[in-house]
Length: 546
Image 1: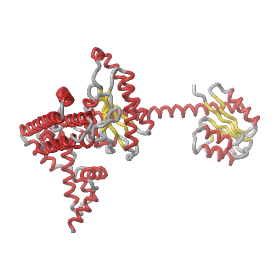
Image 2 (image 1 turned 45 degrees about the vertical axis):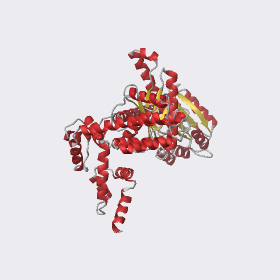
Image 3 (image 1 turned 180 degrees about the vertical axis):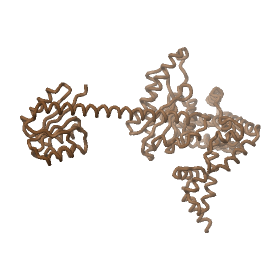
Image 4 (image 1 turned 120 degrees about the vertical axis):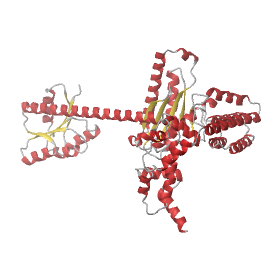
């Protein structure tokens, strides 16, 4: 049972002992935690113990600090009940004591029976406050749990591919602001002994993995005064997100993510028969960038086909990754590989071949066979993920990666990558030419007329008589960009036209292109153009006057 703690303050030792004996006779639920001779001594005790008392029993007239001053000072920082005991029957004292929150004012010599009655009343009052505080804490905990559950539901929806997140509205307002990183945690190849596991076994291990991730992410977030969220992905994969309150704290966030990933990988290897690979996105401040961060992490995880599993993969370089010993795919080579992928997405064969030629020219200057092999494999993998949105054929990719490892020279490696580029270009071209471009043009025209409205993918898909998920894939296949990127680009282009008119306020521009929050519009405009709306307007008006 939680005891009721009393602190006695009186400058007469005999009175302090007498009050302590009366309290001891009121039951084991009471405990005298201290007896002090003056108010300052009692105040020091309260500071040392963070005000951990339930009842303060004090005289008024004492040396150094009197009882009224003690109550007044202590009430600034701590919550407790107070009872005045004095030999002076002065109405002004009584008024002041009650004003400072004292429950009662008893005269010396103390009537034992009256004191016990008052103590019993105070005990009930303390119990009522404790119960109310417990109920309030329970309600706050339930509220936090409901809020967290809602956040997890949103994160699960946003990171699910093919779903229309525009229908969620301003979902980012559900989360604290700051700097974020997303982690994608995926089981590596299943060991032979695990292939005989029953459904019950798998359920148990899945539960263990989920709890390891949740607990360790929570620990790391707490160590850095941040927040963490963990949720289930497809099959046995998991997602996590770490947030630090300071938007500029990217370096500390990156270090925290590395720490969390290291702990998770070690714990899963220790307590289960599995290993996991973890891919971390770049840091981002705007949660509307979460779908892109998730796509980035999904792409990075495939680099375990080259570098092996049980590692952390990060995008420190364009499409690159870091392994256990901090070995990297060459950033310059991967930058060229990214340019090849961009050419494929735009169906530009000449540009893709030009960048491929540049890549192998650079590789001829390399002296490490392992670095050459890894660079070529990295570009090959990036090519296989470019152009169209579809599930990866990992068997075929692994066959290509093995062929690169077996290649006797650089020319053979070049031939393998060239064949992959040509195959990918043919696939992109055939997909785009096979279908009628009509629905895309209809969709763009419909969007252009409604840039000021709240546009959902479902509304667009309904207009062209397609399901939302199929329309998203179809649009990306036909245009090379997602429908959400297309909407944002069209809004930004419309905003540029409107900003050229000095008579339209920036807030009005924001509304006319579909953004109710002008701050969010300004941030998004700068991401797309490099300038804030006001900076862009200033440049346009200056160019018009010159």
